[in-house]
Image 1 (cartoon, one colour):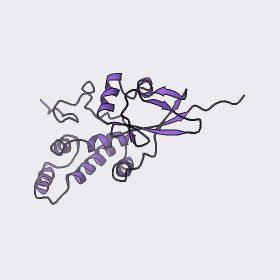
Image 2 (cartoon, one colour):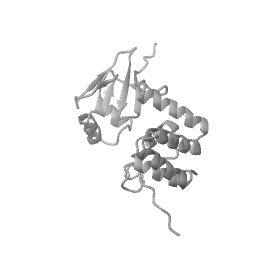
Image 3 (cartoon, helix red, strand yellow):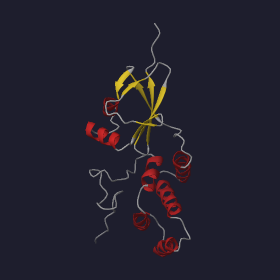
Image 4 (cartoon, helix red, strand yellow):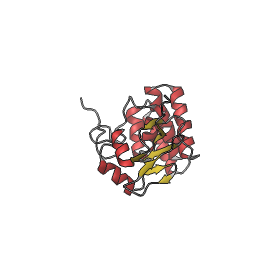
Amino acid sequence: MTMPLLEGLDGVEKMSKSLNNYIGITESPNEIFGKIMSISDPLMFRYFELLTDVSSSQVSQWKQDIQKNTINPKDLKVQLAKLIVSDFWSEDDGKKAALEFDRIFKQKEQPKDMQEIELKSSAVPLIDLIIEQNILPSRGEVKRLIRQGGLYLDGQRVEDIGQILDIGSNEEITLKVGKRKFFKLIAEKQSKE
């Protein structure tokens, strides 16, 4: 018996952690939701067929509806993302992830829950911080992301590869890495002796 292979987020290669085109079932609901929203429209139908209980006739109908412009593909992708999050987490988590996605990408707000990173010194090279915190796997990857305009500090695009973070004692800075990763950078709290 043979089973079809599930293509990864790129829509070309099979889904694989080593190719970094995968959706991990242990990832947070928001991460799963965001990754599904990033797939192409044709790949969305493949995911409906292989990952949900939606009937083939319904998927065929949706394809026709998209060709007739009677349904927005984004609405179907939201439905797909909710279904998949619900399968691995819960229906409530699927709804919350949809609301959070809209809040971040439609309303351009910051996520409610961001991982906090405490800075131990007031002047830290941004690349070093990102590598030390395992946000990205290599210095080359960080440099590539900066060159492509994918790193932001408090909403401002980082353009300097040698950017130094200088954060005051009561300050917080939001670091955005790519489209979906947000971190709150805070100064290390000084202990009073």
